[in-house]
Image (spheres, protein in one colour):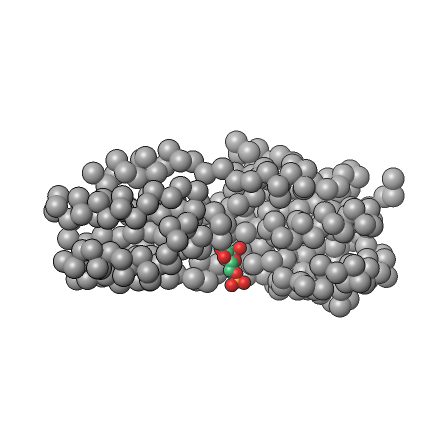
Length: 327
Ligand code: F6P
């Protein structure tokens, strides 16, 4: 087994708060273990283009609290081609890199698995996405921060909703997963929460909103996950309710990319620090094709392929709790 003397780190796919803290952790752990470190700009695309820079412990000063990623991020089409991956491999050899840490989501891990199969190149993944849709970890980097951002935004919407007796549909991110919607919905006291994992039907939503109205609520918030499977987008949902409940003035707010920005929460910073250290230690120990994650507040590992294919499980009991809360 070849000794790992130089580790490269990249951020890939959609950025998420805590990625900088994870870069910092990888770089500092490398310095601690006297292993050289390089940063790759713009994920796999930067690797293909040879955009690599040496990093020392001092390269990552004052970034633990910053949103975004100092290494930039990208979704690379070229890395999906054999030629692109060949160029990436050549650049790693040219820079004498022995192993790679990929901070990203399932798309980034899929690229890593394919690359490892072709070139047998050691890779460890750190789950970084606000969607929390990765198997093998209770939390992905950035999810906690995004959740708090969404709750804060919905709290503000509630102020104006209640001043005007309005019903608001608030769309949150999460791709095909309802983690942000469900948890932000419960946290912000939404009357209804629509998630992709359970389609309760439009009739049920209407009934529930009518009941809220009957029992004295003058304003309401419905949180809709962007991947919701009701068959209507958030604007169509709003129209549907306006048609069936003319007594309500309805508005729509799509929170969008604000959920991806901002200073990471303390939870995300601590998680990033723990996962970065573990990733470096695993590579130095000759391990590969693993994702580091959190289970029962312990740092654990999951096979990278399983992390992608394992699917996500959402706590459906929270929907029940939400129902009880809106009594
Ligand atoms: O995966 C993170 C995420 O923010 C999803 O929640 C969302 O569906 C998607 O990325 C948006 O992608 P883009 O930034 O390319 O519009």
